[in-house]
Image (cartoon, rainbow, N blue to C red; front, top):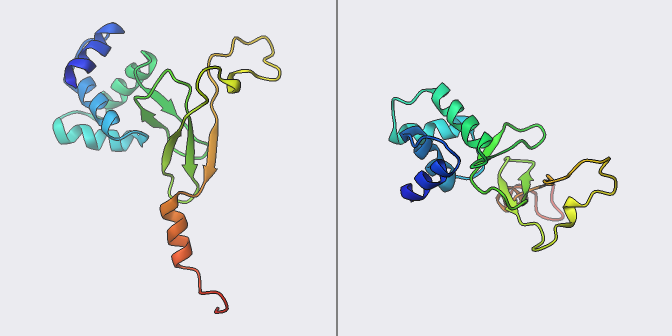
Length: 149
């Protein structure tokens, strides 16, 4: 997939560099990770890459529209390579796991605000909150059987 990443970088007038390719690969394989995780993943391939280099790459890729930065309330920023389709996210209140939630296909009603105040709306961010299946199962496993305390 490196040639595809190279084409994506060139299409947005960014130079093809090893750190940029490594960040894109890390985010492709591990969507919704925070900056520290991206740094760890990139360093697995490029041990000498600095924190600042990864921060700079994430900023450049986000500004170029190749990466999306998501910031659920109360959580650290996360990154993903799924861009341009106005999808949403569901976040586990317990462990912080994040998953994609597709918007409707075709017309996106979430882009039709009841009062847009004259804004040209081009994106809506909806975050669903709840408990992921793993955390729900763990919680259930720790509950006492019915009738016992």
